[in-house]
Image 1: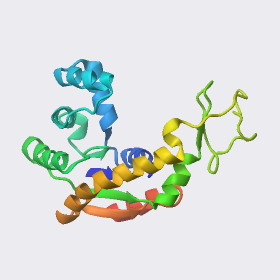
Image 2: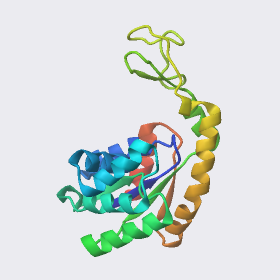
Image 3: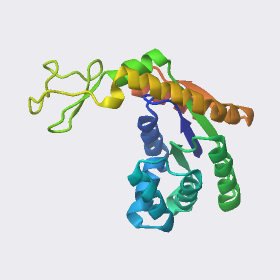
Length: 214
């Protein structure tokens, strides 16, 4: 089973990819994991990626595509995978198709797009809190601390990360919508896109995806 998982920040892609990986015994491959692995292994592409990452720049398409080609050549990806965070552009999607056809003799089975209303995404992300001392994560709605604003473990004051503040969240979502529409349209045009309602509990969303996969 060869899958791509799309969705905006806060949609739960990583969580759902982990569940699909577990249930179907296929690797969950994320862009971040691929790049960190390449950097750690000190491959030629990894060194190039590291230079961009250390400067805070976006890693160029050709480097991300090259790292993806190397990752998909690993033995554990031969029988399937779930990609999370790649592709991000139509150009990357076309390259993924070429890699699979030319290197693997395969094609994608499905592209699952987790569709979550903006109001719900904002609620999910702006409610997140973290303990700066012990690192424990909370959510004001889904996993609230016993005492408002204080960590259950060490009593430190909880903080909200900068990128979880509402103004930043709205900006991230706007950028995502602008950048993702061509990619979603591309996969819809080639008949691979399936939209899944991403609202509900983790288990409920997982059941929706499994129902589609059959």
